[in-house]
Length: 466
Image (cartoon, rainbow, N blue to C red):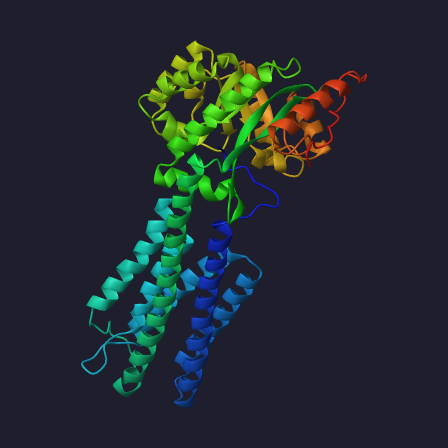
């Protein structure tokens, strides 16, 4: 159930989230431009040129954030907005917005706006980054809101100016918070709605599997990887990037994973009745949440017994990052399943945190070179070196090495030159339904009768079902 990309799919949540992120950045840019322009005119009229310079800087930053957002360079735009706003807000609060009995400090209220903005933007980032950035804004807000000292500033504004400023700052910060809270509420509502729909989809047969062939450099189909899809009755085809993370957050990954495993095993049994497909293996991605269940081994054994699948044809894929949770427990379960005949593949190798000491203890059959390395293997020396390292390491440990995400003949030739001869990717076929997969395999058998020169690059088959 890896988050494998779809072409021409409907990105239900991620597209909306990205759109809202851009709206959030537009709001931030608009606040900077409006406040920078308004205050620079005001302070220019009363001759406060130092403050005018700061306000013009705010105006320029707002325009820069707007330009970056327009170019969809949202990450750069966010960190420019967040960093500059932190410095500007703290600087204005300490130097100019000195509290008095007539006018309390108000500039620091914008820190709350940016804190909420950070939570929204960094929701999918590492928790350390998300909470550090948000925490810095909240801490600064508490300090500035609880301190009445003027810090000895020689630039403190007169109360007659700051009374008006207090109303303006509070109004704009309240509007900013209102807009961001509205965005957050919409996000929660849609996630909740999609979670309810996903729960129904598991039982209402809205989910289905596609199969992406795994082929050798000689054109032989060894097997496939099962990839889950969701045909929503209203949203259309929902991307795995949208519903797999949601399933993991809500616990629906357990019934979803069970359905995928059962369906894949039934498909293997169906293939075993066709001579041309009888020898194929099928890889099924297993979530770490499934693996961590105490009775996971028993669950897999029960599915195999119920479906009648031959265990040696089933291959379970787990990601390298999942090994960071409870390695010892995972190793024990892998050995128990390996004793039953089930195979294992380590997906996304090179992107996680497993050590070589643990790697040699895992009863693996296969290592996968992550598609992020394959994609730039011809243009990035580091990716090329990592690909060579994975091939060499896997071969020395007795594992089969497969490269995923192979899209060009050049990538394929590079991998073959470095002794990787098993591939998966759009160069050979996109993920396709079971009937199209059978046609693909038959066409490859027919092609295998065509004489080929040993050592030449693989000849991709026409993308069946394309």
